Length: 192
Image (cartoon, rainbow, N blue to C red; front, side, top):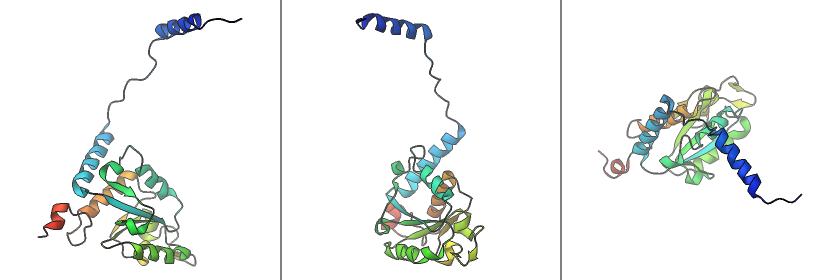
């Protein structure tokens, strides 16, 4: 039986009118949203420019990578603050290293560090990057990142949360002037 669309449409509209709205009310912003917003504002104030991050997995279990990936979602709006991950170390300001440094990654990690332009900074992420974690030093692992490269900041945790990673970047910003990669443009042009 061929029918026109009018009775079906009228039926559908009548059902919608009877049912009413089924969507949930907009969630009220919780404290964590304000905290992230505050951190985002601080990132914007501190960096005031683009900061490029190169990430190297030196032998981690990928727990830290999941948290780093979460850091790049729209909730944290990292790129909105001028921070972005890059594929080449030649474009990076900060080297983010996860995991204990496996023997097979030592050379690759050093080459990545050497390829970065000066000034450059290294952040060891997670318990494994900070102290070698449960792997320590053995036949397949050189242990913590600091045993292979000069580390400017460690963010402990197994794995550290995206918020802890952001706080680590902000702590790097508050390092003494001579070591801080995050001077404002005014400070860079007018050193005191």
